Image 1 (cartoon, rainbow, N blue to C red):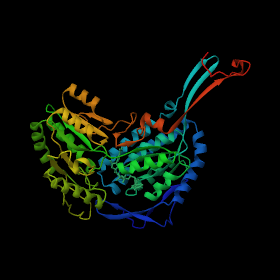
Image 2: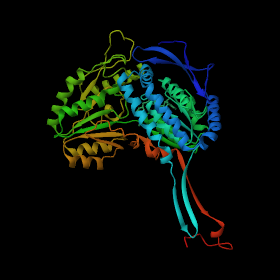
Image 3: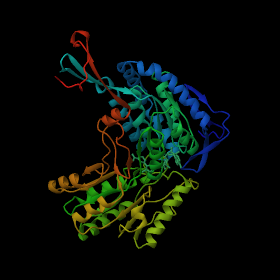
Image 4: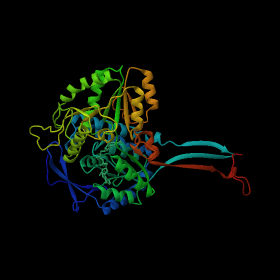
Length: 502
Ligand code: NAD
């Protein structure tokens, strides 16, 4: 599998590009720490080439009837279904998540492809006959042109596929700048789209880092940008992109709380916290990183149930069928998580289970970290204020329900949250009052299905539209409204008064 010489190329106008890239970067298998491949890193000239290819392809693609565009997406779905194991292996090799978790990522990506297959219906316009004498009005949504996606490492297939099917279905051409840490999935998506019959240049992949991103942000040929990643970068993308006159949606980081009410089934809540806190080693923007038990008795009983579960976490490479979580993405990230745990302890949190120093026989070079549980965390602590993005669950004890709600509402992030309770009134009140974009009632990771839309609130999103689902139709199109009157309806002579519906 390991090929030290293999270069992951850009894919521009349907062809590999960048064999002579002046700059490349190693791509690591996080389970072993070995560099498996290198990826080409784009310059502004490479981005310009991709934009030109996408502009050329847009002309034909935007004129292709939506039903024909949908045929490509149906074929993409077929290809993904047939090759889902291979896609999952590609994800895991560079990301480190377990095979089953990667299959789950593919399944959620498929939902978006399936929704986009309904594009003829989704793009249906509005028509009003006779809005004034002999005058008809209609509204339609037209594509924007070349749009770009900039994506994070943690879902190297799903997050790009939150964007690509919707943008293409709407008639745009697309440039993807995936994470440089696990770039191979993007090239596999390109292959799947090519096999599905997408014309060259409609979808292009440009690999790289800040240099490529800045070129995208500044290129006048790009109309819109979808970004998913950390909050500081999301804010940067939003500001610079908007400043350049582009439409931008930029989804950022998270700190997701789960409130556990005294009446909740605590075994169910503890199991939910394990999956939501430690699945994918906590590297999910919808991971639950803060448990908020309400009342001292609830907290004591919950922590008692969590400790043996966290200690028993099965950690291993993606090839281990029994593993529940894999390694972290890089050594630098693993060390950052370890530093934050140390800071938590220094600031007064009780380190109930400490995952630092974990190592796995035969995989000593991997970026491992065991599950960590911290109790008595307070809102003032760094571990509470910052996104950790690792297998670390903090317990912040609340005396009563209103205190839990106020704390969550005061947090700058507002991506996801959940409440575990048997009390319908509490659940209903929570869903209404909580200032968070995605809410679970006894559902720990409330990622909306493909025909709803995904998006947080506050510092977890910049821009007006959520991603995928109906919101994506609005983001990837612009509205045109046509008022039409035919010669028999036109009165003789010029009219100088402002038109009214008389
Ligand atoms: P990141 O912000 O470091 O990188 C995201 C993208 O931005 C990558 O393509 C990267 O190359 C690029 N980038 C990085 N630094 C840049 C810079 N200085 N200038 C320009 N571009 C830059 O994020 P990550 O570490 O890859 O992913 C993890 C983060 O993503 C977490 O904060 C997580 O919460 C967030 N995330 C959010 C969602 C969501 O839907 N809200 C989903 C997944 C991940």
